[in-house]
Image 1 (tube, rainbow, N blue to C red):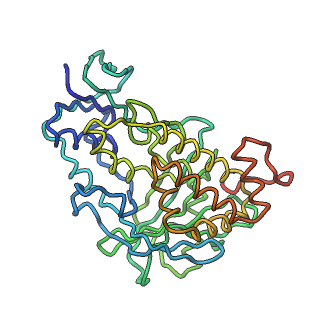
Image 2 (cartoon, rainbow, N blue to C red):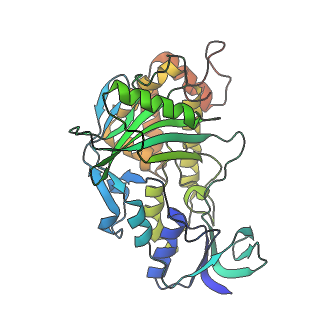
Image 3 (spheres, rainbow, N blue to C red):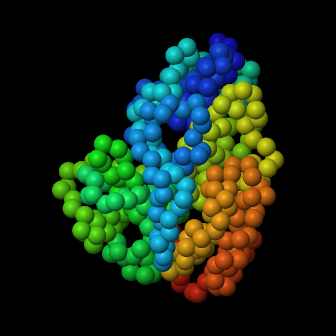
Amino acid sequence: MRADIVICGLGPAGRALAHRCLVRGMAVVAIDPNPQRRWQATYAAWTDELPSWLDDTTVAATVVRPHAHGRRAHTIPRPYSILDTGRLQHSLDLTGATVLTGRVTTLDRHTVTLDSGRTVRADRVIDARGLRRRAGRAEQTAYGLVLDDPGQEEPALFMDWRADNGTDPGSPRSFLYTIPLGGGRVLFEETCLVGAPAIDLGELARRLRCRLRARGIPVRGDEPVERVRFPVVGGAPGAGRFGAAGGYLHPATGYSVGAALAAAGGIAAGQPATSNTARAVYRLRRAGLRALLALPPDELPGFFDAFFELDLGLQCTYLSGHADLAGTVTAMTRLFAAVPPGTRARLAAATLHLPALSHAGSRSVIME
């Protein structure tokens, strides 16, 4: 079998790329171990990241000004959209593609071999299989409950580090993520931003229930549950890789879907999947991940206070600027200057791979 393009993996990134290639009239082969699997995760993105070609019905809710809270409250003047997962998957229509069920055993620039022994050749081969969990690999974990809207005027909390989740000050930190899902439903999710190992889902569930009790939000006990666990490292920008496998996942936030949707049209049109500046930005973001892992628990809320007090343009660049090297450097430099001296020393040491500058016996804010 031969095609214009073979796409390995039909998660959001791979399916979006396959869809945009079909729109361009290309012969597409898509390979996945379970191509009919329905996506279950909740996906969201900054509204300005979403491409113009995306069907409007895929957006379940939009929050015009989400909030964040470290030691202080912050309003983020950047609209944030929550996607309807089922509609998103359905809108990325694969009619006309040849969809093969199987696992990829080997691939190169032009050839893919499946576990059945079948070989597929194409002008381009794209690996969009995401990231695999491995021992010692940093992960993000989260435990969420889908509740009826409690009637708060602005339920969206992009990140809330307040310590009302029943933990002591020295424990690894987690934050509350609260977003509307449409239809009168709200997701309340306790999130470990990143850890190696990350905070256990059972502990996150305990923290979430404690936090909801503290805020007077009732829980019946039969609400839908969302469990999240995925690696945030393992991929890197490179020719023939796309989505999380190709460095589109932000290692310091775990976000990737918005970036992949935004880039899918260009990749389908033949633009290179990576660039030297994208590689440099990815390395800087990995340095940012090391910096986060180096901070002791009590410094994390202040770190994010400093971040959300940056100029909005710099926030956008660091969170969404996949290939904006100058902007990423500026954002990180400004943030470094804004944090207290002790935090600054730890950030510098982690960024430069120097020994940790923290008191004996201390633990990372997010690592157990």
